[in-house]
Image 1 (cartoon, rainbow, N blue to C red):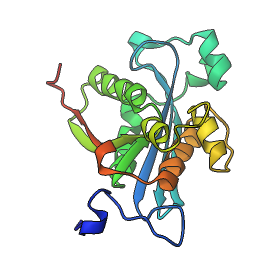
Image 2 (cartoon, rainbow, N blue to C red):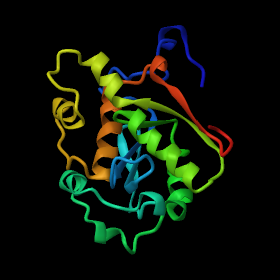
Image 3 (tube, rainbow, N blue to C red):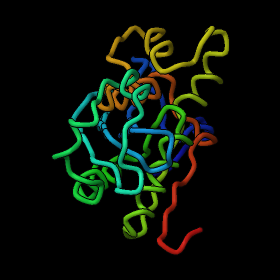
Length: 202
């Protein structure tokens, strides 16, 4: 994509006629069963094109056998019960579909991306899945810079600032929310990083 002098600071140009940017963003959120890395129990992914929701995917996921248990206080947060996961697919069974969504946008967005991508990397490693790389940005980091006066930068607080509500800690709703936040704030090039995973990485 070519960038003119006026827009070189930005990865995408913001339209003056509206707040939301013209871009393809993929919101991503994981809910986890316990504190162990890779204990993913729910996945939400959402594609926003020009600020409009065009694709959503969500799954309940049975964690890898090494981390297959639910901490009750985590159930209190996201509402997912251990028994709900007994017949759910494990991560490799949903990975091809999830990967397709992640690679369909121009940047993956997660709120506190370090958390979600740590769990993603661990799940990929636990199952010895193939290498993958994609650009990503953190809506938490972006909102802290763009909205420094907000008393809180939790996902629900930032979403409320932009005037939309959602069910917090629902994986799909969280994925949609973080993408919508960045569609409103804009995405500067300095916030874009690269997620990389290879089976041979430490």
